[in-house]
Image 1 (cartoon, rainbow, N blue to C red):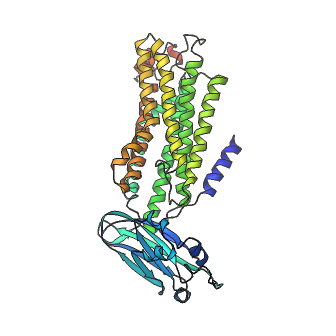
Image 2 (cartoon, rainbow, N blue to C red):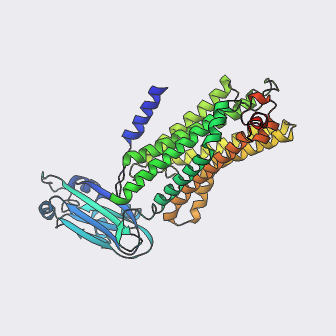
Image 3 (cartoon, rainbow, N blue to C red):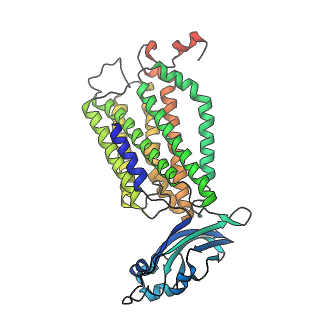
Length: 434
């Protein structure tokens, strides 16, 4: 198991590419010819004082090749239908690369607008011309939006602005909650009980989400200063988030499948426990494998994205992942309906209904938010989905924690002896605690 986990970590950290809004690379004449203009980067400018800074290592070679950087305003699909000459002529801002450094001001944007940069030179549209065996041009491009003071110093594109502050507030909330609840949670875990495994998984998932938020914050904090960030931190954040997703799925499927498949033969003195059987384990493992495969597929399907967030499905893998979550929600609804419809105890039905709320919020928040994001502007959609999913899943975990740690409801719903229950009134009253 540890070998498989190490292999998975290596794949995640080493296979993905991440780049920020400080773009470093090579201008290649052959690539520019093949692509009718070499794609360099995209950036969403907003408001006034947007700027693009181009730095070259060999301005003399750039002059000899008649190198140009072509800036296009919101023309992703229109360029594909043009031939080479028409495509280059459509550039809104052509920048001649003849100096060691060139600063290009972007016109004022009435609304956030995506600009893309292509490289071209004298050989780009000359299919039969021989390209001299010169070295490629090494470049560094810095892209800036205006900061709160109106100065062009903000590396964040319009669709990323605000995420840094969100992760800071999220970490602050995690820290405060940890200070308040760490001691009673630790006591509950030490006492064990029938829900010990559930509480361990919930705590593990919460810790993984906290690590993901911390890695994202570190990445964006560095990104705000240099436009590149720490790609390793971004990849780690995505990895911890994926592990938390599959861990939560395994727990929820194991609980529901265990309750249903073993319901007819389990003794009445042991209700509501994590019932393990070959069938329930197979269901849970199968769901985890499918979701894990889709998460990995989605993570690398958008290879050109800077810091890819799989909260915003832009590919077939993302759509399949959302369909899987809807299907799982329907499956859990069917399972819980079978249980609730045959359950005579009102308190146990309330227990299952509360559990259902947490499950549905966890699985359905992503598809619902994705559909709702269509009413927002383009630059707001990714932030709405990303922030919304994180908050909704955190609320789902709070619901489940309250359910499984509730002293009164837990005592009344379970028919187990008080000596085996964590955080029950009988075990805490004699110590002066409730």
